[in-house]
Image 1 (cartoon, helix red, strand yellow):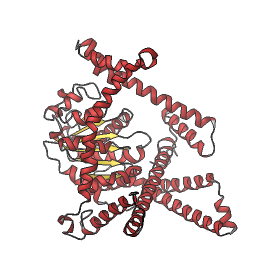
Image 2: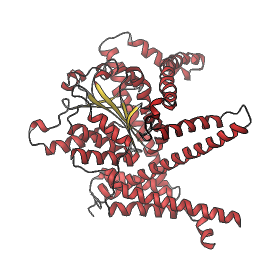
Image 3: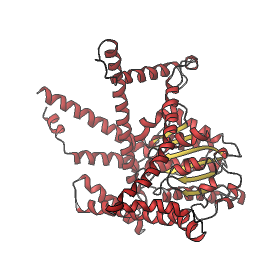
Image 4: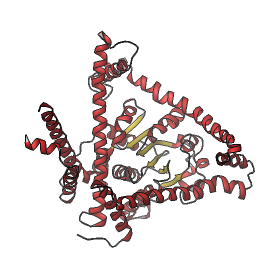
Length: 213
Length: 286
């Protein structure tokens, strides 16, 4: 055991224990650590935004390099502040419209291509899928399971007809796939949370107490 | 039956205590865990290994303290792979919070290699072998803008140096000069790289993600949109194993060290779930 004398590691370790103390019950130590985290995170973000974003991307080009057309960006951005002036608060719609317009144009084609067309392509059974039994996710077995799973899960969410007959069977199979999906998601979530716990103990037992390397 | 009744009303703090013990003990008394490398990780390693000399590896480190235990070992293993194979690396972050951790990983791995270098040519030099581009918001700007010009999106690097003055960046203009982008993220960022950068410019994308996002993002590997994928601490341990066994790169393997605790914790949780369900069924029958 070789306890560190580094004050920053002590601060990190003590704050970790403050957060862990919530597992026993809510207490002032937990509240202190939580509020400190929020304050530090916001301060860090604000400082970084001013120095690394607004400075080099707006203030320097506009006020130092004299690129006068940057005044358009500054003006449109400043309109957000008019939200707090009731008489002219409607002007806030201009920067909002610019932002929404840009993002809508950029997001819609990208999402359709990446999330819909390519995913449908990957679900369609092609002769290539039937060339081998076991070729990872493109072999016959997994390709057919994938196709059946997608078709049956979609049928479960078809609510325009009563789930009877063929639709009843496929929707029940769909429920099985959905449950497997939920189970996998839950299992992965548990793994993630346990990993975070391990990370904290690696820090406490390692750099702080020096019990492990 | 009394035992089942007791277990069904067990104080959650006792469960926390048991879980803490089963996590701590394997860390103090480690045992060798065999790591089997799965297809998604193997493909990611192969994709990075196949980057030609004229192209670079672009790493997007988007992890913060909340996701650091799962994702930092991935970042370190990726850098060890790239530096060992002399693949040039450009690192960036789409958010502000990960910058400090990204710099820490870069400094750590560069120091590992430089401390073992016998001649100057073996050293890893900033600007020549790797650059740290930093952060340029909003994320859509680098995602789309770097397809046209990296130096225009990042006129200066993290340290304030002019990007186009760095020797490594003289021949790196846009995504055409990038072999693969690997996004190590605790969120949805890997999908953005696929949706914007890959769809528009055709660049290859790989991902290292937290376990929470696995069921949401695995489909992008199945569809071939991700060239490879690392999932959670297990994925990080697999990449560490591949780098260590294939390239004989030494160095601490934090994810592999954690597998004993991960296994023990999972086993404990499974036991608690079984006990909880048995006692629930028993109480209902009563």
